[in-house]
Length: 210
Length: 389
View 1 (cartoon, chains in turn brown, red):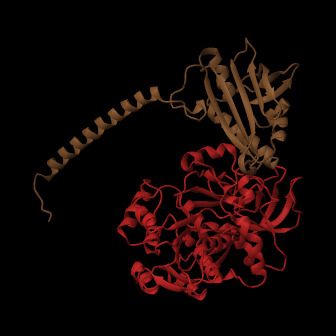
View 2: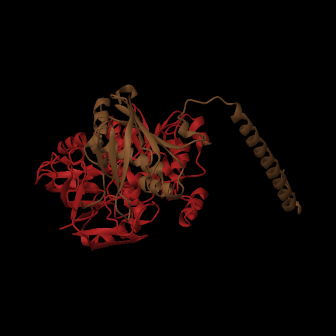
View 3: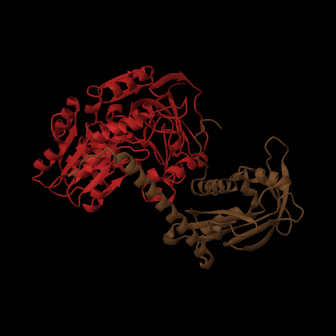
């Protein structure tokens, strides 16, 4: 049987307040406990770039995409660096040099293009290409792209990752230009455009004009 | 060219805009001969789907003649085609599984971020249906640029006039997939909420698949159309739906339920009034009275098929009933390309007629009047077909 009492309002408020306080304290306690736990945890199997707390050192960003094409074809297309501007919108041109070196011409919004020298540091045919900017470059960065067969005949998993020093000063300006402020978003979009180009032969657009 | 553009809530206008051109190698340009206003266009008209910009060209049900093709299109100039509202590349994992509306490659990359934030993944591009689905210009226009024209458009013989095949673009396959998603078995009773175009085609399809069908709506004209398709009907304004469905199924409940209403449900329940208020003030996107009722009505272990469009979040969702009764849900935007060839054959053989639905034919210039009436006079305006010329 329910009955009404004139004190229901304040009593309810007091109960709620107490409840909130208890929940708040409990949450704080849990968070502390979780932080303590983190110290003792073994690393899990996820890529390091997905850690909640970024490890010390250069910042990493990267993404994986599954492309419904053979590994060798994707590798060959990527390894011919002249193809990269076809899906990397910020890159105007890549000019291959000798012994794995290349010059990247980056479109700088509102200014003249910027050149960046890179060299390949490791490559395994059909599997991996790693590169870094040459010492003295405006941006210090290194990256690698890995190709492996997807399960169930789904094609190839392409996993690209870039490590760079957190932006600041002159370097920050270059990095911002390179990655259009959000390296994560830019990288993800580039991989998706790569996928579109390789799977469909074109890059989707809803523009009605060229 | 002339095209119907969205300008804001309840404000659509026919304006002169630049003609489209071939942009990508697999494109085709279509000169539109017939285009329809879809029930889901009313969600755009009512401003309850996010991601529209003033000036966007609406329309995703259209057909016409090919007037130009890119080098990699398989179409030829002069062919008559019906164009699926889902844009699909035909080459990705999902297209190869015939899950065309999940195509990885047709939603432009920059447009995918918004949907990924909202849904976790981006779906295929759709014609004329907001920038969440790619921002593609729609078909309520004189001309349309059709990407991946080697995969989507289906060539129709000249002997079949537009009215007979136009609905292959969306609502007929959508109704068919809704019935297929109901997993109909022998002796099944299927209840269908909403006798709009999709609901009616779901009824027609479920009848072909051998089900007994009970249709629920409140517009007399639409209930009459449902009855003509072989359904028994419930008018929710005169009858208590849950009790009636139990009585009409011997206390079991329908074996499968189809929500062909979606996010702008009508109804008298307190839940619906609250949803409507929240939708009005932009607080919670979806109204779900029909869906809630369908879940409660469905028999234990039954199937829930949801062709109705939802965009965001729904509260007071009877998740407990769904889980405890062990229902199976199947839903999604239609994989149009999966069904067009089979349905075209059924139309050609006279098994399926879709022309009964069309209540009004208007010149494109009168499209705004078509929207207003399709929205406000739902009893009599069951389907509007627009003619650009």
